[in-house]
Image (cartoon, rainbow, N blue to C red; front, side):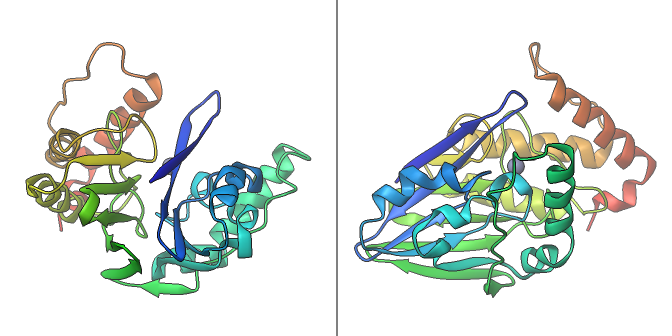
Length: 247
Ligand SMILES: [Zn+2]
C-alpha cells in the first residue's frame, strides 16, 4: 500500500494505491493529473481501478494522469449525480478564479456505481467499499480486512470531520463506532491529517455526537483555525435545527 500526498498552503490531501497481482486500486486522485505520476509509475502493466471517496474537487481531479485514464472508475451513485452539474461547475469556477492553473484537469465520472456497499477483488487483497454519508451524501470508506486498514476519505479526519449541511449525523456516528469496535482494524488512513489508529474513529464519533446534541466540544489548544471555525458554524447550524442531525 502506497500513499501520495499534496500539500497546499491551506490544506494537505492524501491518496492511496493498493497493488494487486494484476490490478492496482487507486483510492482518490488528488488535484492535478501530475499528482498521479508516482502511482502511474507503480502500475506496471496492471489494470487500474480508481475509487472516489466522494466528489469533492480535491479528491477527483487527477484521474486523467493515471494509465488507462483511471481504468474502471468506481463511486457511490450520488457521486455520479454530483458529476452531472456540481463537479463541472466547481471546476469552471476555479478556472475562472485562477486562469491557467487548472487547464490540465479532465473530469472523469465514475461508471461503476453502488448504493450500500461493493466488494472488489484486488488479488490477493479483498477490498470492501461502504457508504457512510454525513460529510457529503456520496461519502464512502474502503476496508482492506487482510491489512486491517480503513481508507477513511473525509469520513474520518484529524482533528475532526466536516459535517455537511442538511445531512443526519446518526448513521455516521453509528458507522464510526462500529468500525472502532472491529478488532482487526489497526490503521486508519484519512484523506486529511495524520495516519492514525482506531482511537481517531472514537474521537470523531465523540465530536459528531457533541455536534448533534448541541453540546460544547472541548477544542484542544493549537487547533487549526480552519477546524475551529467549522466547528463554530456547524454547531450553530445544529443548535438552530437539531432535527437535521438525527436520523
Ligand atoms: Zn477533502
